[in-house]
Image (cartoon, rainbow, N blue to C red; front, side):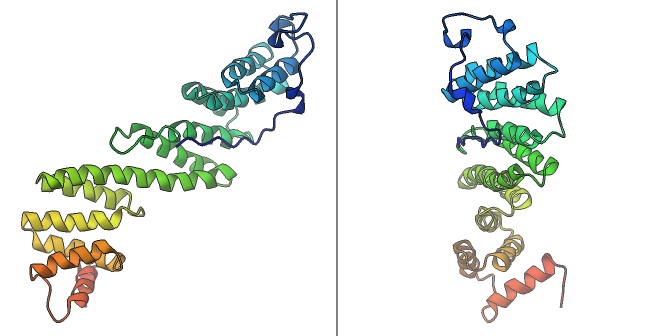
Length: 279
């Protein structure tokens, strides 16, 4: 799920030209890094980044802050180091630099980007649902933090879209485990997994199936009323889905619905059980 991080900071045109006498570019006269100005070092790092050498660029940007911590370029060098590490696939280093930026400049105009970049270092490493989802959970938490701390930023809008995708991924993992238990007859364990989907990820497209699987599991346990209750929720919210049709068929096949008013029965059950309305 790799996505290039949008960077509002534009590389300067000077990064595309060599700096005379700079040791970073193999000039005829080598100049020690300590003898270069903050601007020279920063431009050298920009040039490295433009050439696709993100790892070295990050290290060079770090030199700006080390040698000129109170310069105007020092602050920008921190966020540029984070971005360079991200581009190089050095995600731990990118997080370290981005977190450092947030610690030093939490209200700066680029703080939202720093937080979003931290989220991306996890989001881009989300693995398939057959594996551990710790990284996915980290991505979700950092994306939510982006929206919470910087709600009006352009990065918050993009983060919200990724939150929806991440939630669906986590819900799919719960469904995968729930199906595993269901197939092996561990019905209570399966129901617990499907309820996680309904409780935590109810806005995802996994919810209709989760409700249907709860109907299946409850019927297998002989808990007919619980199955009817789950089907009523499914029918009220997802009546046009195939999962509702499957649950409807299961219940009618067991003669658990009134023959003359099956749809109305579901709706009344929903009102009684979910909305606590008895009329």
